Amino acid sequence: MLGAGGVGKSAMTMQFVSRQFPEDHDPTIEDGYKIRVRVDDEPANLDIVDTTGQAEFTALRNRYLSAGEGFIICYSITDRQSFDAVREFKQLIEEVGHTNDTPVVLVGNKSDLKQLRQVTKEEGLALAQEFSCPFFETSAAYRCYIDNAFHTLVQEIRRKEKEAVQTIKKKSKPKSGIWKRLKSPFQKKKDSLV
Ligand SMILES: Nc1nc2c(ncn2[C@@H]2O[C@H](COP(=O)(O)OP(=O)(O)OP(=O)(O)O)[C@@H](O)[C@H]2O)c(=O)[nH]1
Ligand SMILES: [Mg+2]
Image 1: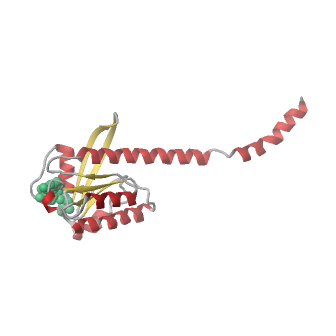
Image 2: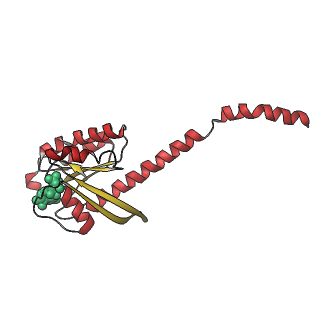
């Protein structure tokens, strides 16, 4: 879970893991949750790291960037600054992973606080399109689209794993041209024996 301070990373995680909503903002230093869920009828063992949004613990948070298989980047729809910070989180992930292909889901949380909205849904969608990643507006308070966000990240991780396996298979398969050329001398010998 990545995102600026107070956007609801812990609230989303707690709703997902234990169906509880913390009313107070208790700034996270670092929390971890292990949970087994089923996604598309397949079990998934999730190791969720709820990171800090507090600037003073940035170094601590960054340790998880290289270990993470996938990321939920959160902002709050009521906090323009948290939306502006999303790009920095995406860049960090790219830098650490040396790829722009790490599974990411973008989440605009606190969708229940409509009257305090500072970021439109269209802006969220446009950023997700730029990142080529799924997007949800969630409410941790009302448990809206929380499962969708986590399950979609699992699907993204699985999809990219499958793609990686396909690429390795393709690379290790000898090209038919070379293969034919290698085989042809033997073929001729065999033919001449007959
Ligand atoms: N109305 C509403 N409030 C929310 C929602 N999600 C979180 N909050 C509130 O926002 C405050 C901050 O939530 P946290 O989950 O602690 O935020 P965080 O992103 O974990 O913050 P840090 O750990 O400091 O990075 C708390 O008071 C929550 O109750 C939501 O969906 N709707
Ligand atoms: Mg927190």
